[in-house]
Length: 436
Ligand code: FES
View 1 (cartoon, rainbow, N blue to C red):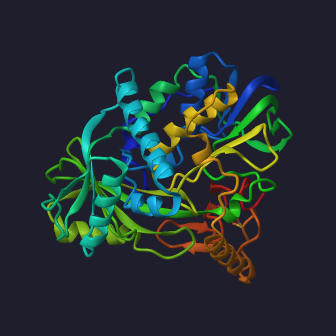
View 2 (cartoon, rainbow, N blue to C red):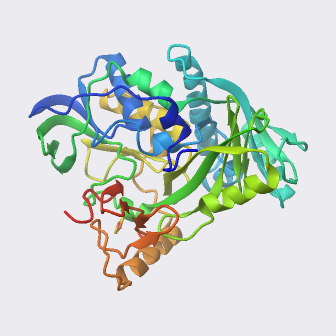
């Protein structure tokens, strides 16, 4: 077992490396951020012959993309009953179609970029509320989607059954993206300090572009879009166990505090123990207790944690960054479903910079999507962090940092920035270290 948290994906694949920016450059599209959304968007522009540069602050594919469970599915918890109620039939159907398109796109691309792609079903189970499962089945039937209801699951816990999406998939995300990135126009170790119009200022010179796409996990430009009010961050904990019979299918509890399961080769991945960043949660201790109770012969091979951006209406923000920033675009808020969300973002953003119409554009456009009660709650939570008198302050907007005992980091409860014990910035929206 590795002593430091390192994901199974990081331990079994090293992505290609790229040189830093060499002084100033000019291009049509600048993409900031070398995670899944940035790389897939760069790939589409590359295929279309559109000039672009992707800048990554450190090494590509080392953020949330390296820490996912890598489930490729359009089943996002029990979301469709909510979408149907709140957004209506046409928009709920569009959300489903966009995500189903993304699942198919991975299947197509995985033939070109081998990545241990495995077609398998995805299940959302409930331990206590069968009615919620039934309502989801009804919503899916109304949308014309053929889900299945299953009573028997190969899980070590008692459930009331599950809603199953039969044709979904899993893969090794870094193998897929690392190989796909090999020929792309990427500069690593190039930190964008600020944007001045469509000029990006880095410590290695500037890049002038006609359009800029911010794909930095949490959008780091504060003066447009108000993302620090419209997003919050969540941590989830994962481990890979050997010595357990691998299971067919991928499983998720409808309760946000429940567990997730999938296999990769002969390893079983379990996840849970999550909490809002900067708050307390079960973390790996909860997973270890679960493994000891249900898989006593298992050996812990890898353990790691993921940081996810959550939007207030549970749909990603993909499109124009702010109300008046036509040249500045964004992709964020994938709500833990970044595999399909990033694939959709790549298509929407590439179409947008090429001036092509896209049937899904309006659905994901950030503008105007303000759920006021949730916005107020999120703002109040941040205000509490601002008023806390702790001496350790976050360089993003000044909230009090909290010491995370499980991960030995300083975490910000306001918008989720994190810093190592030495002050190095681990997660944005902060764009600088703690002691600079
Ligand atoms: Fe915004 Fe800390 S992340 S104040």
